Length: 282
Image (cartoon, rainbow, N blue to C red):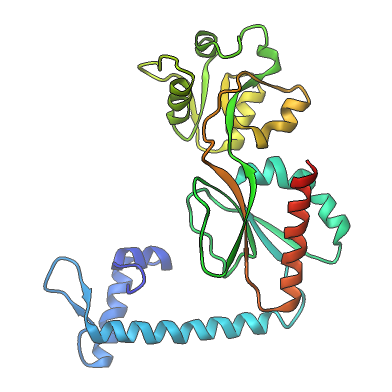
């Protein structure tokens, strides 16, 4: 409750019901001999001594967690946990990962998905690939620019005869494909000086990899980050239809947490150096 601001949010974080949280708080208040919350208004508020208790307990639990993490790292080598948004994981990281494993066969790796816009728990993650319109800032986290987010219209090579570069009518004729919402195409039409359709047609995909698959299968024109689909363009599977771009203020970043355990710190440094060298060599 002290951390999340409401019983409901605390219950969601702990995967229990709100009533279970309320019952536990009541038991604690009974044991302490007095209330921890001011319930006179619609939203319970921690009383000053409740805030003091929450602060002290948070410090204590933080120490317990740190001690457990230190003990855990003294045994077998723990894997390097890398969180990557789906686009980076599928289009960039996995196709190149064998190169890192060949260079560092002694470093175990675990790759998990991170979701765009969701906070990353660096207590469980060593490195993360994210997509943002501002440089991410967080205490104890090192940030490196990774790849640009610049996005341009692309379509499958099979649509070559049906789509004219930069032609709004042919784009609409074969269909538009959208990533999360229609805002990208609205911005592109505006940037291109073209009239935006009153009703934006086309399928909306909630994941970039779904959008890319639809574009590759010839289902329409999609706005895709050049950095993610460059191999598709170079192989002739996708055609870039215009130099006019959107999302130029966005970029991909590599985040690395500071790690006091020497062995883990060296593993993090090795992966970071490999990523940056791959970007430089591209």
